[in-house]
Length: 102
View (spheres, helix red, strand yellow):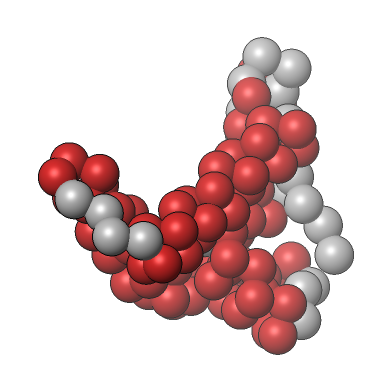
């Protein structure tokens, strides 16, 4: 939980901040799909590989952290799995901070 003295000053306690970051997570998935459907070369291909690895390996790995956080907050396991696979840390960290509630 953020320090109450800093509540109004920190963006990480703001739903709009986290929703903006969640848009970035969806953009990452769109980039992965676009890259898989086209023949990327050069630096864009390297970037695509990095993003694909981070999203495809990273998001499932985050379930180890996200599921206990979601259970403690009262979210159903099925919702926690879907939200973590799509949004990753941009979903479960604000849940942990109390920004998102069931």
